[in-house]
Structure formats: C-alpha cells, structure tokens
Image 1 (cartoon, rainbow, N blue to C red):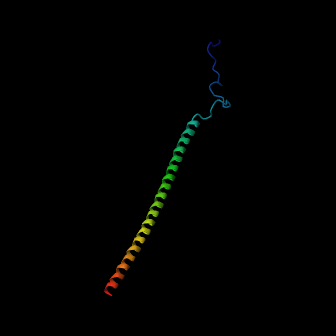
Image 2: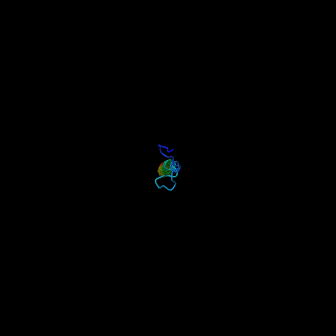
Image 3: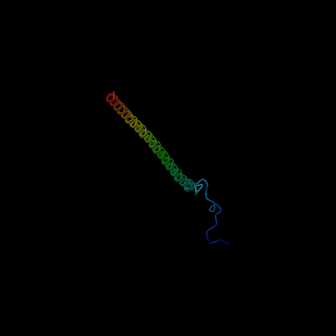
Length: 97
C-alpha cells in the first residue's frame, strides 16, 4: 500500500546548518542593533558630559578673569584715592603752615 500524500522527509524537518542563507542565530541582528543603539546613546551622553564639563571650566576661567579685572580696577581706584588724600593733606599743611 502506497501513500498518496507527500512522504515525510526527516531531513526537511531540520534546517541545513551549512546553508549560507540561514542565520545560525535569528536574535543576533536584533541584539547587535540594540547594542549599537545603547552604545550610541552612551556615546552621546559622554559627549554631552564632556561638553558640559568644558563649558563649566570655561565659565570658571571667565569668573576668575572677571575677578582679576575687578581686583585690578579696585587697586587703581585705591591708588587714585590715596594720591587724592595725600594732595588734600599737603594743601592742609600748606594752609596751616
């Protein structure tokens, strides 16, 4: 007695591991994409952190430069005030004589 339907081929139920069209791990491309996306996010975070750090350092340098300018201005003003005081004292001495 012969069967009229297709004969069950035991090799058909198992894919050929040497077939180059067949991927050995179907989750690998998805995993690589997820890792790539995660690495991309991490790289962007690192770049943002580095940029923020650079801006903070630049702001600190600017604050220091502003402080130096204020101190220099205050010293010049103090020097002018000292000379003005000395002139006023000299005039008083000359008047009282």
